[in-house]
Image (cartoon, rainbow, N blue to C red):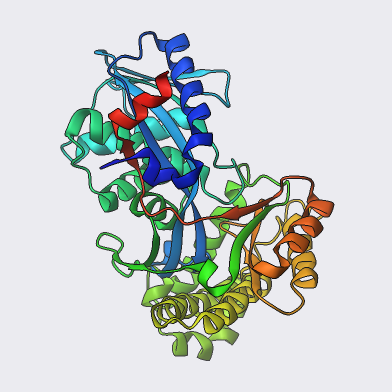
Length: 419
């Protein structure tokens, strides 16, 4: 898919040109002549509903956002992919003739390797290319920088070697495969799907091989609200074990009923068996299963409320989802570092600043990183000031929804940044 820079960034395109120029200069410095290279962009995502429900085949609502990763890429005629990011000193190199998982390499190289391996398995062409990137998606923040990176790489492979034939749903599944199998993180499909499809999307993963997706409209400005995420300063990039425990514990509950995932379990049967479950599994898996059943239902309700234009009902369900994550899912801080509770503190401060209006919840995978709030526009200045007084200048980000996922930026417009 191709997209104009003006459509991607709207009135912010003039500011974005500086980043595109920097990317071009970086490409030239590391890889040589950029003639014939193309620009690509993939967005971060914000989770709107369904916190940790996707990996148990539940329902979610998510949106692509206006913070993205941009890369300039060009075929290099070799069997090696070389990728350099502004944010890191190293150049990642992957030999596409050697695509077996490397159990000692769980960084960005493993994701590139996994994406190429899966594309090849599915019958797509792969090849060597050079790519230089710069991102605005905060690493470890809950805005899913990893999914944005993965979708960028899939988009490059699709456009450079396959005429853009990899559709957004398959691109998301390729990216998830790389993260599950090559990176070792048992994520669901929410992050990759939101980054790949774009817009506000309700997703049902009852059959994860054929997820049901439906676009929803959400014009927050029309309701007098802004969507904010606050970066609390924590980083969940090194908390894979905490994250992995959630689907594992949910699936242990499902296994008690002879099922693989909680979506297959009858909630009534679950609630009738809490006593025996507690004796066998302990308390936390039960609480996390309760969260799944509640948040799966709430995500469906949120999607319906958006469809009906019931914004107040939507906010009530967002708040209920946040309480469930706090009480049952317990992903607001890491059990390995209980003295660090930035998200819990941010939620408490947000409730004070919102004065009973709007809604707030943990955002994304949790444990560290960001919290999300729907803030009335008349409170936005006060909210931002209050949050930055606690978590530092620039911590509060006002997000906009981006209508498209991973795209190639149309060359005629991209070339304007070369001047």
